[in-house]
Image (cartoon, rainbow, N blue to C red; front, side, top):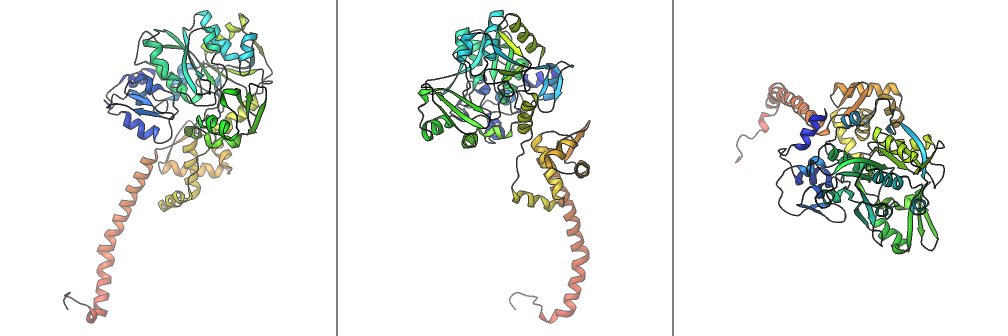
Length: 472
C-alpha cells in the first residue's frame, strides 16, 4: 500500500547504511549513478564512476532507502500512477497513447537531437506554471556530463541532445531545494534513474514544501556508457577531438559522430560495447515505463520526429496543452512494432551462468532444465509460462512441468499465472539444510547398522593382522 511505502521511506532505523548500499548495489555493479544518495547525504561524494563515503556513516539508511536499485514495489507505483483504462503491454508497460511528434519551434528544431519534443514540453511546462525548474544534464566543451538546474527556456535549450554518458542528474536535487527554493520540478532522464525520482516524489527527506516533482520525462534507452566511450574511443581510437563534435547518435545498429565541420563518422554499435555502463546489462526497461511521458527516436517517421508514449494523466494533459498552444505537432505515423521489438529484446536479456556453477547445482539432484528455468526466471524478474517457453525455446508442457516441480521445491512462487524466483540465499540454504538432514540420517545408519557388521566380519577374518597397540 502507498502509506506503507511512505512509512518505509520515512523510517531511519533500518540499521543499514552506506556499507550495505556499497555491498548490495555498488560492488555488485548495480549502481545507475543517478546521484540521489549524493544529493540526500552530505557525507557521500563521488568519483567518475560511483558514490563514495567521505565521512563516518551514521547508518540513517537514507541512501539505501532512496536508491533506485533497492526496494521498489513496482505494482504499488503502477497502481498509483496509471489510469485503469491505459493499455498494458509486457514490453512497453502502461500507456494511454502512442504518437509521433515534433516541435513547431524552429529555434528548438535547429538545436534538438531529433524532433525537439522534450525541450518544447519543458518550455511549455515552465510557461504554464506547472514547474519552476528542471533537473537536466548539460555538458562542458569536451562533452563531460554536467548535471544542471534549468529555470529558463534558454537554459533548457543549452541541454539539448543525447550525451550517451551516464550522469548523476539528481545530484542537483538538494541545490534546487536549499539554494533556489524551487517548489515544482521536472526531471528528464533514463529509465533506470526514474525509480529514485518516484521515491522522492512519494516522500522527500529534504523538504515538505520544495522539490515536488510535477513532471517526469523518460528517454528511451537500450544501454548507456561511461565517459570512456567519448574520451578513449571517440577521441583516442577514432581520432575525433571532442570539442569538435556537434552531436552523437545511435541508429540502426550504428554509432554516429557528427562534427562541427559537417563530417559524419559511423561505426558498428558492437565496437562500443566494452564501454557500456555495468548495470545496463541487468536493466529491462527500454521505454522508461514509470515516466509520465516517454520519448525516443525509435519508431518515428524519420530523425526529425520523436515517438512519444503518453502514460499518466499528468503526461497526457501537458502534452495536449502543448498541442493546443501550438508548441507541438503530431502524426499517427509511428511504428509500434519496432518500438516493441527493441523493448522486448531488452526485457528478455538473460544473464548467463557459468558451466561450473551449473554443474555444481546439479549436486542437488535437480534436472538441468529445471535449474535453467529457475535461472531464466531470475533474470526476467517475473514471467508467465508462455513467455518462459518463448525465451527458452522449449515446449510449453516441459516448462509447465519444470515450474510445477520448482514450485513444489519452493524455488519459485506464483500468483495469477505469474511466476517469480525465490531469493537464491533462501533456496540454497534450504537445500543445504535438507542435504544435512539426509546425510545425518545416512551417517546414523552407517554408524549403527553398517559399521558393526563390517567390523565383525573384519575381526573374524583378519584378527591375526590387527595391531592393538601402536608401539608394537
